[in-house]
Amino acid sequence: MIDAGRCKVLQGDVSKLALKADSFDFVTAFETVYFWDIEKGFAEAARILRPGGSFMICNESDGTDATG
View (cartoon, rainbow, N blue to C red):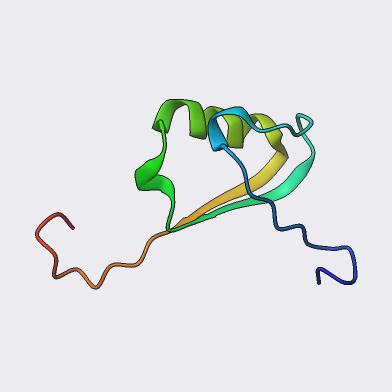
């Protein structure tokens, strides 16, 4: 999908994304959210999503850790 131009993989600071508002249908975060300023990160994800877009956070947990 990257070669076809349908997917972009970007690295940056989620609290200040250099991306246009309402420009993405789908935003993901894999194994990163525990490093975020949650309010700023969620606000930026919402800002860059198009109306009706989706935001998916994925964190690995098997449910056995004390914090989980």
